Image (cartoon, rainbow, N blue to C red; front, side, top):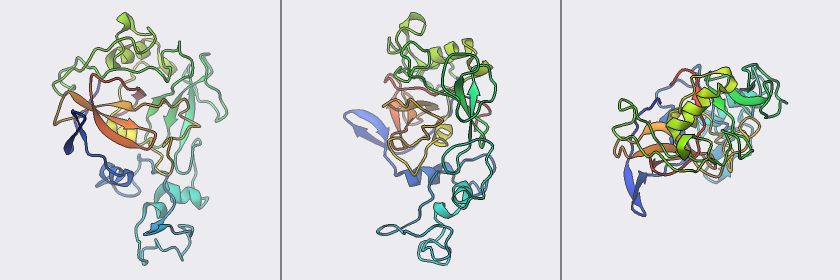
Length: 283
């Protein structure tokens, strides 16, 4: 299982070590720090509304009268740049579909490309994965059936036996929190990766845990509960999603992203959270 170690300031909540909670705007600033505004391979945030001190400015970002104009009092706001602004102006070309500047394509169990109206299912030509046409990553789509390997209600402890990527702490092997869908009823991330690859999900066997940075590319910052495009990522569970990224100050923890509001934090590896696997080049 692939992993990236990440760090931040610590504080303690009910005896558990965790990361200071940052506003979503700061998370995205950290995520894309040093990356050019129009960098190829990075999605936008879904934020296409500009603000002043009292709230939304009420003027279209493309309007010269917008207070967020570069010559105004609130310059260089995210709403005026990138794919979201282009989508709002009606000049963005997409490969697939998705809200605002996001660009997704549905992928079938047999690996073929599907139309936007395809339904989830277990048949060869049913929808099972979603490809992000901007990052090139393909994501597992959670299902609504409790007997499915990828059911949205299943949770897993963070576990990796690979000492070169687990930050020095393998984590917890877990218990039966995934309806006996994994060997020995040990519901952990490593066992889940193995099972999904054995199942050849969407005709591939290179599924892995996403890094925290990769999970954050799915956050739809202009929406909450959930902060993700449900048209392409349905059946969102009411729990956080593990990343592959161990937490450097305390290797017994790893990063997660909660798509209720785009919140990212660190959690003890023995805790159970959801998992959304990914395939494609890591970044």
